[in-house]
Image (cartoon, helix red, strand yellow):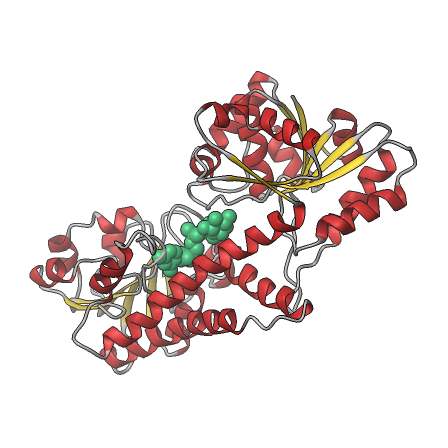
Length: 435
Ligand code: UDX
């Protein structure tokens, strides 16, 4: 089947490469010339495990091609996925100008029937605006339908998530669309996955509702962590105790410095705003957001309680990405923690397997801020070690060797990654978040 994808960002590129892997002929439209040139050379501008191999594989197979103009995408396929950015405006609402722009361009160049599919996260009822826009600007009488197929992939495991989704949600206008999506996702259906068909508005809502719910689980765990830190309880044991109830589930209950990234902070804010616009007060989500904000401060307070004075203390900081297996630092809690440490006069050595380069744009090397690739070297003569992202390489660290590098064996764990007993047995003073 022929498919066009508008926007070669995170979601667009993963979708394009995976559809090519399914056997479809994919044309991916990217407007930014530098990005397009990179992609045509087989270079992937983001770090995502396996993505560059898959992109190169299907450039070679001829099933994945790149173009600069939406009209080329329109000419290529009947089904066109919109994967353009929907950045956040100051008031929390989504800026939908790229969606509107793409819809207008499709309308102006279409001369045969088209099915436009929203994949970017958009507020409920955006499908109606797309439909209206295309009808206003189209020059031919060809029919257009608008569907919604939200994406639930996580950075760091995006290909795996695409290929093994818990569910595929598709908001459709009618039976013809159902057939289109059954063909599109054929290989997954053959593996026993199911498509849940809804109407487009429901599909749009499902995306915001799912992400907000997951963020709510994290904030719930973080509130428990706060309570545990004041009692003789470890939040790790408490969340295990509740998570094993199948109705609750063990995932997304890890307490720590809170959620970051390009989705949860933005989607929670957007959902509060969407509810407000429809006259519903989602106070619960405002609290989710507030708790998340407080976690970073709680961690900074913990550092101060332990170190007393940060000035001139040598601190190794492990982890800068908003989560492991990504180079993404958008809304990373590490930004606020490092800013606080720097402003309070500490001398920092920062390590991150993938995100250091991006972090240097915000915190360039200076007297106070140094970067290294070597976790042990970062801890040399350090007064404390602070863990902010639970990368696997940090988990596998040799504690005895680490202890020998450090001036003082103080370990502050913003992700509750270490096992208290294990690190204490290795001679560390250990401080976690409610554990
Ligand atoms: C999320 C959703 O999971 C995904 O379905 C959606 O499509 C996009 O948004 P992502 O932002 O890539 O994916 O990361 P995710 O793994 O969900 O983690 C988000 C943040 O929550 C990270 O900062 C992570 O550290 C934090 N987190 C996650 C916790 O603090 N505790 C947890 O238990 C889980």
